[in-house]
Length: 285
Ligand code: SF4
Image 1 (tube, rainbow, N blue to C red):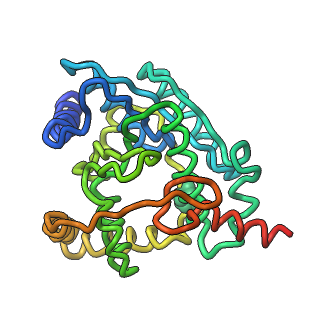
Image 2 (cartoon, rainbow, N blue to C red):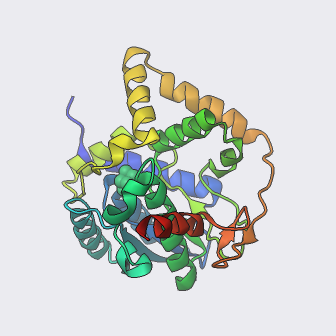
């Protein structure tokens, strides 16, 4: 049966709007920074928040932030897609890069780590948070979809990192003045619906796989989940249901300090960004 574009758009935007309303992800006067990589999830997020803003009875402000990690032959199309979709949605876009902020590209330093995703994720989160904080953002909206959330849950589970369970759910608490809390408007949107929306609407998105993604634990868990789901349908929703039960258990609140080196929020004495910078300088010297 052919899927009708208008009906599908109505379904997907209504579900996102309902999640925003149910969890009060956006409030009057909020300044929301959208993490816009140019991939399908972040592109749906900017379109969905623009749609919500146009239908909303109250005012709130949007900006998009893109971070260029410096991955040759991969990132530029993502940035081009971010520019065209931000223009289409009439949302201002701030572009930052590892090379301007840190003095190197990911391509220059990834080999010092077990996976390129370790320094990539740490620097990207750091740059995104600092940029959003400087802009005065109340929240950062990310494109995490239902599949991402299940993968993150299993990643933390497989690492025995139960502290990370407090990072699940459609909105995260503000736990430090300088750490802008996250909201996830696609939290209950399956990845396949995001893909269908992009295809039906002929949206300019960055589809290429990151050349480093096959090295990551996330890629392996994603592959495992997709294979298991095709052989045992319902696996993903069972994992999600278990995860929601855990979410209902009151979590231990994480208190953050300020990094002794750079002053950014961290759970230890030195933040992950400074730890990774010191590994890089040891290897470079
Ligand atoms: Fe960065 Fe890993 Fe994502 Fe590639 S797959 S963009 S290296 S986090």
